[in-house]
Length: 452
Image (tube, rainbow, N blue to C red; front, side, top):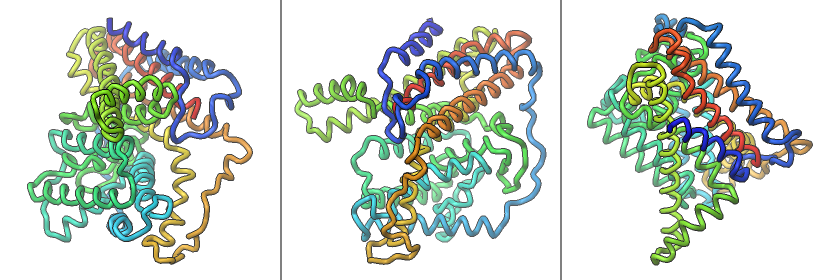
C-alpha cells in the first residue's frame, strides 16, 4: 500500500503541468532535451548509485564519532563575525523604522531574506556552522548578562515552530516590508532574551541556530560544543547529529517549505488550489486578505505534512523490509539523510535569488536610512543580469547538478546507516523504500525547477 502511494506520487510529477519556479530563471522551453530525459536520467543515476553502494560499500564507514578537535576557532574572526551580526540586526531594526519604506531601497529585506536566511546557511554547508559566531542575540544576551542554557537539548520542537513561522512570514504573509521586518526582529529578540532568562538553550529555541547546525554538519569541518574544530570530511558529521525530539519534523519542514514555495508559483496551483480555496472562503464572507492568509497557511502546512507522511511511510516500509525496528525509530535514525536533500532543494530554488537580488546589499547599504548617503558608492547601482544576457541555460545545469548530488548524498548516508542498523542483505532491502522516496523527490524537484 505504501509503495503504491509512492508510485502514485511519482506519476503525479509527470501528470501535473510543469510549475513555475518563483525564484528561477530560464524555463522549460529553454531545455536542450525534453524534461523527461532529465528526470529519468537523474533517477537512473540514483539507482546506479544504490547498486554500486550495495556492491562496493559492504560495511558502515561513517558511524564512528570523528576524532577530537584540532583547536579552537580563531578568536578575532569570531569577534568580527559577532559584531557584524549585531550591526546587521541593528540596521534591520533602525532602517525598518526610519528608512525607505520600499524593499528595493531598504537594506532590511535583503539582509533578512537573502543574507541571513540564505547566504549564511549556504556558507555553513560548505565551511561549517558559522551561525554561533554571527548570532547577534548570543552577543546581546552576553551584554545584558543573560545566562542562557548551553549545549544540545533533548528537543528542537520550539525551534521547529520558529522555523515554520519564519517561512510563513516569507511565503504567506503580506507583511514583508521593512517596517514589519523590524517589528519581527524586535519580537524575536525579546523572545530569545526571555528564553535565555528561562535557561533555554539556542539549540532548543532558535530555529536559525538549528537550521545552520544541520547544514553545517554537511561540511568537512565540524564545530564541537566546546568550540574546537575538527576536519572530518564531507557529510561525516551528519550521522552523529543528536536524535532530538522534533528533529524529523524540522528536517521535513526544510524540504516541504521550499517545495511549497516552488509549487505555489505555478499556474496549476493558482487555478486548482488557490482559486478553489479562496472561492470557498469568499462564500463564507471572509475578506480577500483573510482568505489569502488561510489558504497560504493551510497549503504550506499541508505540503510539509504530505512529505512527512511520505517519509514516515518509507520509514515504515524500511523497518518491515529490514526485519527490525518501528517506523518512528527508523524515521529518527535516518532523519540526517534528508539534510543534503533539503540543502539541494533550497540552493537550487534560491540560487538566482542570491545571485541577482543579493546585489541589493550594496546599493541599500550605501544609503541604509534613506538620508541620501552613498557610503559604498553603489546607491544608484541597478541589479546586473550580465550573467544570463547571452544564455540562462547554465543556471538550469547548476540546479540539476545540485539536486542530483544532494540526493546521491542522501542515498550514501542512508546506505551507511542501514548497514549499522540492519543485518546482512536486510540492510540493502531496507533501503528500497528510501531509494524510491529519493527518486520521487528528485523527479519532483526537477519538475518544479524546469519552468523556473
